[in-house]
Image (cartoon, rainbow, N blue to C red):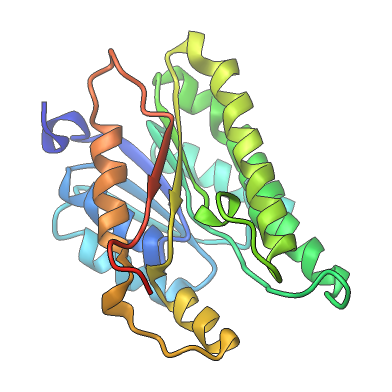
Length: 244
């Protein structure tokens, strides 16, 4: 079974779909024939993703939403129920990154990263899980390789990614008997707008061609989602081949 047949007409909700890895995953799912619910804060960029996806997907809906606001998650759930009726795949790719030393970091930045990277995917999963469970569907958490390599100035962000892993691992045990698959993906530095900003913060020259490409991550995710139901891919580590 190929991705094109395994995911044909599956309903996939992708957060962070306006750019970067989220956009790449959405477009690969569209190529595979999935119907898409695209979620992002930048509705203009989200519509650009939707326009491309509509070339290969039979149904694409865009939802401008700030997932750090509980009411927005509730509204999103209502819209998805009305537009699709069910969810086969939920991909969490939205999030924020703010670096800083523990000694001087602004606690408001920790709160923002917690709400964006932990609380938002937790609540959205909670909201959509009944629909995913009814379809014996799949949930993907796009995490970060930062949890594999401790480094300075990333304590706040890394803490949220460790928390996200814990949520995914615990959820997997809870829903396995319901035939729901849960995947965590840990990309290394990937050529995305956010990574360009991170390089600028670090005072480094940004060479996107030497980094992992967003489509690389997307292909791995779609292939994992297309695996036969006799298997479950639980964790994927993927990094740039070239050392930078």
